[in-house]
Every structure is written in C-alpha cells, then in structure tokens.
Amino acid sequence: MATKAAVKKKVEAVESKAAVLSDVKVYARKVWLAGLGAYAKAGAEGAEYFKELVKAGEGVEKQGKKLVNEQVEAANSQIESQLSGVKSRVAEVKGKAEVQLDKIEKAFDSRVASALNRLGIPSKQDVEALSAKLDELNALLERVARTQ
Image (cartoon, rainbow, N blue to C red):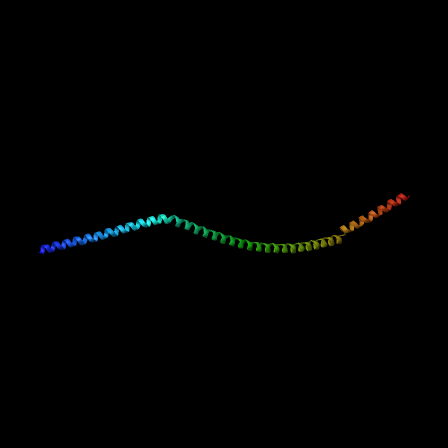
C-alpha cells in the first residue's frame, strides 16, 4: 500500500506541476497578447498622438515668437527714448559750446584790435571810413575838374 500511496503522491505532484505549467502558459499567452495589443494600439494611435504633439509644439512656438517680439519691441522703444534724450542733450551742449566759442572769438577779436590800435595800425573800419572819404573826395575833384 505504501507504494500505491507513493505513486499517488507522485501523480498528484505531477498533476500539480502540470496545472502550474498550464497556468504559466495561460499567463504567458495573456502577456504576449497584451504586448501585441499595446503595439497595435500604439501603431494606430501613434499617428494621431504625433499630430497632437506637432499642434502643441506649433502653439508653443507661436507664443514664444510673440513673447520675443514683444520683448524686442519694448527694448527698441527704450533704446529710442534713450537715444532721443541723448540727442537732445548733445544738441543742448553743442548750442552752449557754440555760444561760448562765439564769446571767445569776439573777445579775441576785441583784444587783437585793441593791441593793433595801440601799435598804431588802423582797423578795418578805419580803412573803410578812409576809403569812403577818398571816394567822396575823388567825386568832388571830378566835379570841380568838369566845371573848369
């Protein structure tokens, strides 16, 4: 009887192993089918998902360009305002410099004329006045010469 019991235990063990093996085969097949299903679904939905990603990327790119353009415009307006301020200050300084140069030139002319006058050299106005008097005298002499 012991042999029957031992054989029965061995048969039960083999049947148990066969049941476990059968369960493993069923589970392996399910894993295989799940993988095939995921592959098929990814293939079918992959194109749509890719299109959605492209649309999302285009939207982000558009927003980025808009933001960059706004920042460039803001920077350009700041540059323009700073440039106009600098130009006005340059014009102001240039005007002041021209006034100062005119004052210096007049002072120089006045001092040179004063020094020439002290030396006895006639000024331009003196020469012009003498020239006008000479023209008057010449005209007077010509009248006198015609009347004689």
